[in-house]
Every structure is written in C-alpha cells, then in structure tokens.
Length: 474
Ligand code: FAD
Ligand code: SF4
Image (cartoon, rainbow, N blue to C red; front, side, top):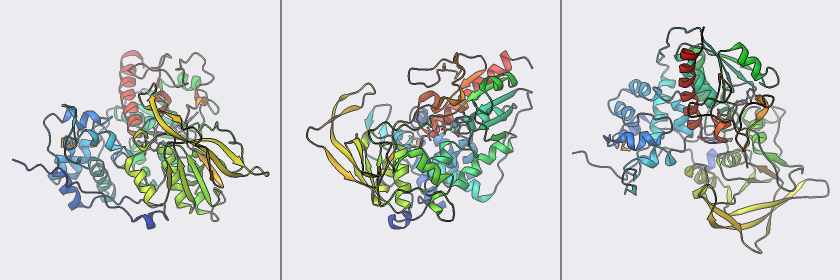
C-alpha cells in the first residue's frame, strides 16, 4: 500500500526577497523535473477525486489524470489532459488562488466529503500545472489542436480578457469563424495590463495567446465597442456575439481623491505593465509615487500595486479594512510582499487623503477597525474602533478598491437587462435577454478570478455552439 506523504510538500523555489524586490522578472522559479516528479508522487489518485480537487477547480481540470501522466514521465500527455478543459495551464498554474480552490480540497489537507481538516499539506497542484505548461512552451514541441470542419457560422467576441479568449478558443475548435474586438493594443485583459510581469511573465502570456492565432482566430485591436463600432452593428453582422468586457472601471470615492499624487490602481498597473513606466527615463511615462506610498485595498489588485511600488523603489504601505483571512488575494502573496518590505495595516479604514496648500498628498487619515456581525456576504462586517483616528504620512496614495463594470460597450443598448450592480444579467447558459448576445466573466460576476472567467468563456462557447447549430440558419 502507498505510504501517505502528508507533510513533505515541495515548495516552489523563489528568488530571495532582496533580489526579487528589485526586478520585474518572475520570482517564483518553478519546479525542476525531479521536484515535479517527486511532488506528483504525493498524489493519492483518489477514486472520488471528482468530489474533491476536480470539483473545487472552477474549470474542472482532471487533476489526478494529469498528475498521473507526470509520474509516468508523459508530460505531453499531462498537457493534453489539462487542455481538455483549461486552455491556459501556464497562466492558471501561476495566478489561481489554488489554496482556496483545488489545493484547498486535496484530501491530504481537507476532506471535502466528510467536511473536516486533515493533518497534511495539499499536493502542489498549481506548481505542477505551471511545470507542465512551461515544459511544453520551453521545449518547443508543437502539440496539435484538433479543429472541427468549418461551420460557416461567424461569432464576434468583445474583449480579449480570459473570458473572451476562452470563448474564442473553444468556438474556433468547434469550427466557427471568430473575430475578437479589443479596445487595448494587446490581448490578455487584466492578465496583460493588471497582473505584474513579476507574477506572470509576458512571454508566457504571448505563448498562450499564440494558440488562438494558430486556430485562425482574428484579433482587431484598438476597437472600443460602443465607440468605434456599436454592439448593434456586431449583432447584425455576426451570427452571435460574446460580451467579455470585464469590470475594469476603477472607483475612487474617498475624500481628498482629487489631490496630486492620488492614483487609481489600474492607472499605476497599466502604466508599468503596458507602457513600461518602470523603465523611465528610457520611456517617457513615469509614475510619480514619491518616497512613500499607501495602497488602499486588500484584494489581488492591492497586492499587485504593492509588488509594483516596491519594485519602483518606493516605501510601501497597504491599508485594508478587513483581515488577511477575508482577503481575496493569495495567502502566499501577502507573505511575499511582507518579506520584500511592505508594511500591512490590517483592520484599518482610510477616511480622508490629506494634502498641502499646493494640493499635493501629504498623508492619509485612517481609523482602526474591529470585526462585527456578518454582512450580506457572510463575512464579518468591520466596525470602527472609537478614538482610533491616526495619520500615515505619505507622498502618494494608490486606490485599489471597488472595480466596477465598464458599460461603454453596451450603454446605448437600453433594452439589455442588467443587475442592480450594473453587471450584465445572464441565464445558466450565459444568454442575455437579447437573442444572439451572450456574456461571461467579470462583466457578469462583477470581479472574480482568471479561472472563473475562463470557465465562463468556455461554457458560454458551448452554449453559443448549441445556439448556432440549432437556432441559426446559415
Ligand atoms: P478582463 O480581464 O477585464 O478583460 C476584459 C477585456 O475587455 C479587456 O482587455 C478590456 O480592455 C476589454 N474591453 C473592455 N471594454 C471594451 C470595449 N468597450 N470594447 C472592446 N474591448 C473592451 N484573478 C486571479 O485568478 N488571480 C490573480 O492573481 C488575479 N490578479 C488580479 C490583479 C488585478 C490587478 C486585477 C484587476 C484582477 C486580478 N484578478 C486575478 C482577477 C481577474 O484578473 C479577473 O477576474 C479576470 O481577468 C476577468 O476576466 P474578464 O475576461 O472577464 O475581464
Ligand atoms: Fe490528488 Fe489531492 Fe486531488 Fe486526491 S484530492 S486526487 S490527493 S490532488
């Protein structure tokens, strides 16, 4: 009988903090072949894995299936198993919050069927998925993609984020003609303009994107749907349209947010991630954060702003009104930025940004919070501690709070049903109330994860396929 290796999980090697805080190079160095083989052997290949890790993966990767292929030394086979459901293993292996998804349900760590904590550490599913994707990318081996015969049906995808890309990928494989319209000059959505290269190198992203071009998907960059072309025009020239425009509109909304030195998170991340602000003066687009910055927020976006500010050489503080346990960012990333020198102020609510007589940021006034009764999401509601007001002095503030749906693509289509939060309403087949118009990703759920957006895009593509084959005449 196989000996259960509860605790000897192989950690993914990292660049040391003093080195990684100076570079936008990837700091998680990935498994070597021997580490990957050893880690794969920890998997128990549970017979009821469909109730555990597979169910906990939003896109349903056959986790024991691909891990078994690794143990057999068949890495191309492992890649084929993963890509049956997930088109971008190298991305998901890097950015998914696995501890809250597949790894959180690995029986070594937690028995999801009996609902109780076990004594071990989960298999490093994310690092293994990254290893398999990277192996195929770096080896240069061409893994052929099967594509059905052309159907003659044409689909427009609006937005080249993970939702739109997964939808385009799946539809192209099913033989449909797919055109993707993207406002920015590059594909990837948040993966390209939000997540720093230190977590997701751009060569990895480009390689994953290349798969779509090989399948014949056409990209139209610089097309702002709702401005350059309307959604109505797309609906009249294509058999179906998928809306995957995300929820990329930053929100400010704190007293003093007009001051010089206040940035929205997306502006900072875009300037660095897309425009190379960190290479100033070689590129003319600096981000002026001064000597000390305060990042407001506690999700992925806040952590990415901290990663970026640290690499720009700025003393970095993060204020978040809740606790680490309730944050949507990855646990290990909080550890990483703390190791790199960021100061995290948990249970701290900013109330006002303070400026000098020239209108420049000089500090941020905050109050301490404590956790009270659960709110409508079930998370304990933070409540202010009396007399806890204090000021953190700083030269700039980055607001990484409250991403909202960006309605530019559909604001002139008044008949499109929206939710009370301004997100697009869909049924369980990702159909909107407009015939032929489907939607998925953050524009539907208001902000979630890359893999959830990929899963939406994939499921929507299957639903579009059914619609095209059953309801649309050529
Ligand atoms: P997006 O990724 O937002 O893509 C939408 C695309 O549509 C964009 O390219 C946009 O330019 C385009 N678009 C918008 N309007 C128009 C228009 N009118 N016409 C044409 N194109 C348009 N999730 C994780 O799982 N792990 C992480 O580590 C992680 N880190 C994150 C870091 C940041 C900074 C942010 C903001 C989010 C992060 N997330 C992370 C969440 C995750 O990135 C999103 O849930 C996911 O990208 C949503 O995918 P999407 O395709 O719905 O939208
Ligand atoms: Fe392997 Fe853990 Fe999934 Fe079981 S739950 S199949 S041990 S990864």
